[in-house]
Image 1 (cartoon, rainbow, N blue to C red):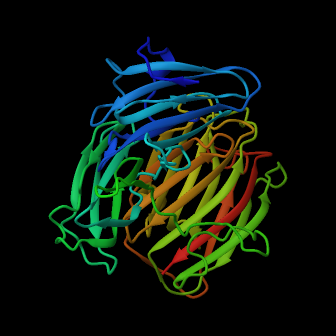
Image 2: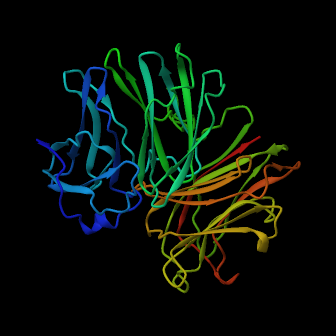
Image 3: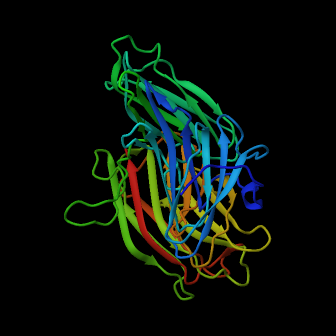
Length: 450
């Protein structure tokens, strides 16, 4: 069954929507429906894998408009029977198609050549494909010549405005033009056509690359068009080498992105490393650090939240104390607070060569759910002056991000120094620090970059 978006009253839940959350997917629509003499049509397939009927809420957010302001926005809803699918055709719209529904829905999107042919896939932006604030994204294999052109689109997934920097380079690394700074409204999409025009001569360029970084969570993609043949293709972000997949011999314990590369040393403690009890409230894992100068420390772990400490549920439950030898040099510390006054927050501290009162603090609202497992990534990138903690609910994919900046550009270790990771607190030892009895700490992984 084909169905076009129609105007309707925006549901209350949709009105309140800002950034993407579990159950919300964005399809960036280029609004480009022709290449040469060929005409293309957007088709979005929505499948309900559950047995019961369910509804997807839809909204069309125009390019270069504040997507958090829904006045005048075209909206609708789509009911899909259990086990069936339906197709949405947004026409020539340029911007974002927002789809909000149950986790049982599955989405795909294509630009289809109306005269025949298979067309090309459109990107789908979810919590697992978004690039976090201040991260870097690469769009590769860009080609331009007398017949072919390159378009680039940027998407801001945050509820606040942001800025992106975009740079282009040839395959040999030489720059194509100057670095551009682009402003984006909250939850918005901007589309730029023929971006390499004037930067290369008539002979063109092959295998060029765009590098994008934004101050808010973001996404970017490219569109290649051939005016002579009518071909059109989408260029999605390049894959990262930060993959934990194994080879043909099976999947080994995760070793992280840089492991095995020159200048990267990795450490792992797989499986359950600590489950606090009244007789054993604090767990510790240590690793000896090779002597050297380091520009980045990455640490990740999984933590399953148990019951909050009943006498003080809003007290600070320790997720990790991540230091080099002692508190003075701290690439990261993270607490979860439960319900109560000042509670339901994530609180981080950090700083190298700083006493504890001097440590920098980051606080963000965060409601950890009892029984949920969270993957926590602590990325202390001194060389890039970036500190990002990402807390991801492994059941829903919903992520909370804390952002700061290291106080040094590198750190030199001495012979015999160790990484130390502590988990959990003793009861009644320090005011506002509470035990995390029966929580589960697992799968610690560290990467140290020279």
